[in-house]
Image (cartoon, rainbow, N blue to C red; front, side, top):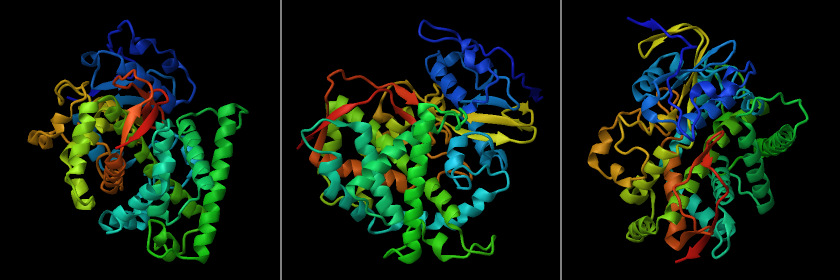
Length: 461
């Protein structure tokens, strides 16, 4: 029998010396409308709590006009992602700052009216075709050959997050938008990206004159103006080959009965861009892990050295590099979770949920679930070198989401990440400036970031 879940029941997380119980997080009882910020704070607390003490479903104890439930069990996650309505619906009220930047884009579309599906059908095919473009590697090689001494200079301390952000920004603009950025534009856009991602999860009213709001408004306005100029240029001059924006300029939208407007294209540009910019995060994690594990770095570089020509097929066939990326994104997924929403009452995981329930799908915790992973907190690439790893529950590791709304870049993104890593590591080795080598802790925000700034030196091989 399905029981009515009590959203104010005790959560039974046992406190430890370093962790408060879920009931002791004061912000969760506030009436302030901060679903994402509260989710991040709760996730940080749950990350320090004994895993066995946590329920598969954790109700959110906050006074809000909707209900919030955390989900960390792969079985329930798969049921939610597979649901024909809940699996594609995002909360229409969450991430207001993302919505202010790309109000109608596929990334933030609520999905309540299936508009995301139509937009994806219009803008998605070119991105999917990138998986098979013969010049995918060539474009990445251009960035690495032309900019490696800029992004990853040898024998000079660099900020790891900044270097990877600049690299992926460079690749993204070339590959998806047919734009070669000069150094000034690249620096500006990388800076705007950092500011916007830091502010995206916040829900403080944007009209308040706080430093964060000022930074967000400035970065948003400058980036939007840059994209408007890019769109205006595209109206005049077509790129030499199709890219992810081409159909939006060249095809009449059959549903609208007209061409897309500049504002609609800008929304979709940002949807693509902030999905693609997230590729910088796993590159940062991998380089950090390799910098603190010299033996693993030697294994990865020996594997890369054994391949005469790095191309799409050979990159995909590097088992050790692939296992490193899989384990990094298991422990430190690019996005710590997903948000889904049910406008109506729904039965999921054997529970009857009331209308207006937001589900916070905790990818970070699901991928550390002891039922599905042996020694889940340990970094162990051998779990992905074992042939039995392919039999794992599909929602125990889902870097790109699940269901109909799975990330459209699920194939091309790993290729870009692995190609970037292989090309960088063939000629360079990351060395930590700080000798305190430790398995890093995550910082939860728009994504899952390194907890502190990391300075590395790229040693020439």
